[in-house]
Each structure stands twice: as structure tokens, then as C-alpha cells.
Length: 225
Image (cartoon, rainbow, N blue to C red; front, side, top):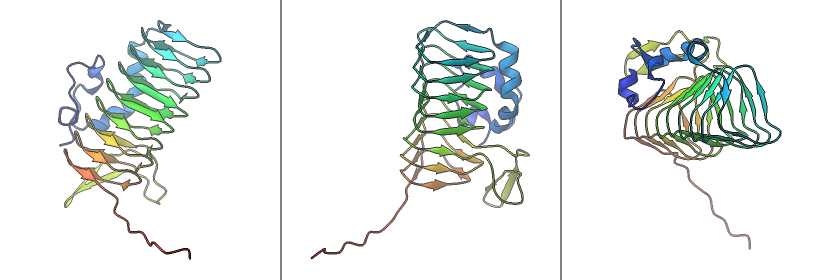
């Protein structure tokens, strides 16, 4: 249910070694920085436009375009044919696969984007994993820190509780997951493959594969005259 193969198709992902030997997908989160440091060969092979800030060890793949105003802190790997759009803020320990989008005013830290995953507009992606083809609607936030006294993030499925042992853990989205505009995923949310989170939804816990999560609300309509 929570193993990397349950959530992701790993065959075509160049950096699938980050999941080697893991029972649960979230165990990859504390590995991201060390993994990047072990494999990175800093270099710029794509297009860096004006007014871009690069700090530390950064790799930019062929065909990738980094637009003006972007800030990228290392260690960070960004694969081939990606878009890092205007004013994106990549804070470090970020591993981005091929064909991905890190969008306008999107902030990312300690995160993994698998191939063709997108955080294209005003997103926050902290301590999270986006599966292949996952897409965040504009304004989607993956919250990564609890404000309660008990800071350790736990996931409850039925009567079973999984203690991740993590203080910082945003969300893990399986392959093909879609979120609508302004959805908020609370710390420790796991979403199975191909599920859809509709706009403005507030989500926590485990969402099984092929599930639609809808926010239902009613409206009062009154006549102005």
C-alpha cells in the first residue's frame, strides 16, 4: 500500500535508486540530500535566462529552460526538458526528473519530482514526492509541519497507525494524481495512483488509488431587489 512500487512506476526514472531497500515511500525523504550529493555532477546543459540565481551544486539537464527571476539553491538536480518558470524558488535538496515543471512563484524544498510531474503555479512543495505525471492545480499547498504538540507525523488507515518518525513530511502523490486549484494537503497525506483531489479541498491521511475527493458546499442565493 505504501511501498514505492505501490505508488510509482520506477522503471523509467533515472534516480530510482533512491528507493532501494525501502519498505515505505516516505523513507526516501530523509535520503534526498545525501542521495543528490552522491550522484550530482554540477553543470549547466540547458538554457539559463537573465536574472537567475544559482547557489551551490546545481545540475541542469539538456533542453531545460530556467526563466528570469528563478532562484535555485543546491544540492539540486533538474533533469532534461524541464521548465523552471519565472520566480520559482528552489531551496535545495530537490531532485527533479525529466519533462517536469516548477512553476511561477512555486516554492520547493527537500522534494522529489518524478518524470512529467508538475507544480506549475503558486505551489508549495515541502518534504514531498510527486509521482510520474502528477499535477498540482494552481495554489495547491503540500503542508509539511504540524502545529500540534505532537510533532511526529502519523498516518492512520482504519485502526492501524503508521508512525513515520518524521517531523517534516508533506505529501506523497502516486503516479497520475491531480489536484484542483487551492487544494491543501495536510502533513503526512498519501494519495494513491490516479486519484483526483478537487479544488479547495482540505485533505489528510490516506486516499486510495482511483479515488475522487470532492468538497461539497451549499450556496444561499438571495434577490438584491
